[in-house]
Image 1 (spheres, helix red, strand yellow):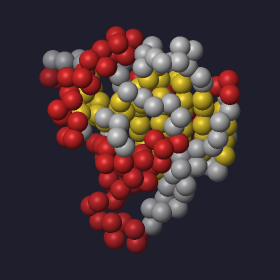
Image 2 (tube, helix red, strand yellow):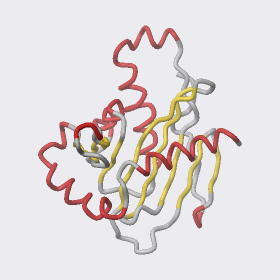
Image 3 (cartoon, helix red, strand yellow):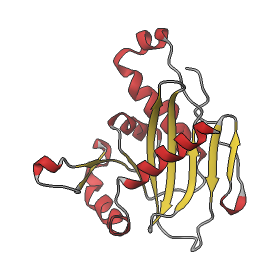
Image 4 (cartoon, one colour):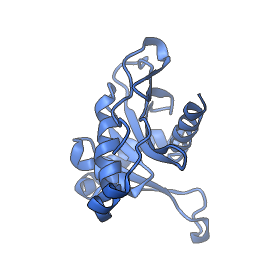
Length: 190
């Protein structure tokens, strides 16, 4: 697959943005050192460029601590044929998700994603991973967000929900994904 999913650049102090090897990284040192951090992991499809991955780590108030995005990954027809139905899980979980998590210097308490295919990152990390979905307003739950841990983290669901309580009080859990998409779209313009 074309594209370097791991190309997120090196360190730059003070929260600057850096581009290297086709990716982008932002790092801001946490002011209180040991505070909880939360990771948000998603992808953005671009018909012109391919599939971009984005990873935003925030503090308990939703402020960015670190941001990484990948260079675009383009899938060939041969890869579509060879990987078959496992392609999306491989792209999201291993090639994009695992590479972004490996680049991060801040270890979050858990990783959240808004895409089911990205749950495939779980075998490639020791961090708990959970899917975040906004419930359909037709179900009478307008604005409600549902968090579903990866199957291997189901036994830790209560602990995951407890960890999210502080962040959920400060931030709509779907909003950081919007920030990632906007940052990737902005990076494509430059």
